[in-house]
Structures are given as structure tokens and as C-alpha cells.
Image 1 (cartoon, rainbow, N blue to C red):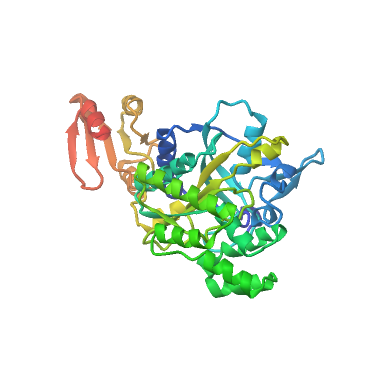
Image 2 (image 1 turned 30 degrees about the horizontal axis):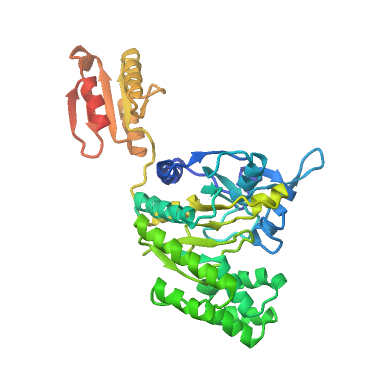
Length: 434
């Protein structure tokens, strides 16, 4: 019988060392790119007031995010929820600190939670890393987000496609199709499924939502992707004659011009890209791996100009744009790539042979030089220690015996090649730092 106390909560996971090391590698790379682009760190709680998460201008009543929010009550009877993303807490954060010098550039990292269905690759707790810029309406800020995204994946070692759209384009097509304001968000959720489910399935879904054939025809033709970005835009220019539509096409052309200046090559304009949350107001984007079994997006975001002002209940806008990176799915892509998995962070393991005091001095010297070092604290024999080093695939073993110390040397063994040599501790430091 399985002990129920020794089971992980459904939809949650433990990570053994090699999995955690694999997850931490992209985290470090992404953080470095964020800071290279001038973003500063902040941190927000995992628990928010439920009203903050459920605001109609945040997730939106029909969104999966709100339906899947973990709800809880504290001992004071207050309604709370676990955050479902990092954007809504950030908007609350800026609303509480509206006097930051603008534009304000930040990044945040942490676990988010969704009480949704469990399936392969989908969990109820997952990690995200976000960057956001608040305080400018210029699509130059959105271009920075896409430039940053391309660099992140280049540094991690992946080729990607960044799909780009503008929610104002969707609004323009909605106006043309005479979709009522109250029905638009529901239709947007269907549009967002075009790539995954195909045209026919989306048509059927729109029929179920009581749209007529003319409306469905306009929607399907409006969201077609051309052979290149220019042809897709030209199609929309011809189709959209209303104010919102023309403005969005112009805005998209400007953004693509900025991307050329940044040297970004991986962006594809896709007018059917909607993204499911209600708070997006302008450009939206999602990042997909090229030549990978991972088909879901690995990053995504967009412009949300109204949420912060709505939290403050003011007519003034706090224009903002941001992008979120999914650490879990990026880690899965790294596994698929068959990148070398490290079982331990340790680079060198010191084995004392009757020389504990002197060995500890050597261990501390290596650690002081920034070399990840461990040693035998269980007083095992050499054979058992070597089994331990092998099992964790530690690259180097260092033997410290009386004979070695008399010569002011240690024996360094390269565990991959099996080569052993007598070297000074200074030489060990130099070798391992290389």
C-alpha cells in the first residue's frame, strides 16, 4: 500500500538535482540578458487578494486563468488566490508605487499556479520569468521586448519563430464583422485556436456562438497569413477601412521597422494570434521553437495599457508592455536537445587519506577561489569515495595523502579520461578555473 503522506500533490512536482540544475541553467542565462537590456529585479508575493486577480480588466471573467485560479481564505475570512501569472501582481505593485521615474523597466521570476486539467507537460505549478516596461506608448518598447526575446533564445542555443499581432487589428476586424462589444472576448478566444485547431473547427465553434456565415467569412479572411509580413499587412490594409484597423496596421509597420533597426530576424506577423487574456490592448507576441517536438509557446506577452490605471481608478493611463518566459517548457526543450545533463554542481571532490586537517584547508582554498568543491565527510575508504564520485559524475577527484603532502602536491584525477597526475594546489586552482 502506498503511503499517502509520501505522495506529491496532484499537478505538482519534485525535482531531483540533475533536473533542478537543468532548470537553473536557462534561469541564469535569461536573468543575465534581462540585465544586459537594463531591466532591474523586483519580487511580488505568490498570494494576492482574490479581487485583485479577478478584476474584469485583469484576467477577464471568461479567461481560463481566472477559472483556474486557486482560491483560499485566511483566518480573518479574507478571500485570497494564488497568482496565475506575474503580470497582474506587477500591475498591482506599480499601482501602489505610481511615483517611479518612468519608463520603469523591471524583471521578476517565480512560480505561478493554475488549478487546471493535468496532462503531459502541463502542471499546476510552473515557473515564469517576466520583463516589463511601464510608462511609454511607443512601440519602440515592444520592439525591445522582441529583441530581448530573440537574444534570450540565441544565448540558450535555440532558433525560434516569434509570432506578432496587434489586438487593435482584431478590434478592426470585429468592427467590420459587426461583432457586438460584449461578444468580442468570446470570439477572440476562438480566434486564438486557429493555428492549433484549424479553420474548420474554429468555424464550427463560431457557429455555436451564434455568428452568421457573413461574419464568419470576414473573420476567417481577416486572419489569413500571407507569404511574408508585407503581404499579410497589405491584405489587411485592403480589408480594413475603419479607424481602429488602419491605426493598427500603421502601428505594426512602425514596429516591424524598429525590429529591422534592432536586427531582429525571427518575427512573423500573424493576424490570428490573439492570446487569451483580456488585458492586452496593442501588440501581442508568442515565441515558438524551430525544429522541436515542443509545439506550445515558450514565451509570450504583449501591450497592456489600461490595467494599472484601472487599479488606481484614474482616467490616466500607465502604458505598459511585457513578455513572459516559461522555464518549465524551455527546460523540456533542453532535455529534448539531449544537452549534457549534470548530476551535481560539484567540480572537484577531495578524498582525504589520513589527512583530514590538511584536506579541509585545501577544500577551503578551492572554495575561496570560486571552485565548487566537496569532500568526504563520512570517512569512507578510497574505493567507496570513487563510487560516489562516479555516481554523481563529478569531473575531478583530488587525493590528499601523506606521500603527496610531503612533496607539497596532490593527486588530480580527470574522471572522464582517467588520467592522473601529481600537481601543486596552485596548479589545481589554475586547471579547474580554466
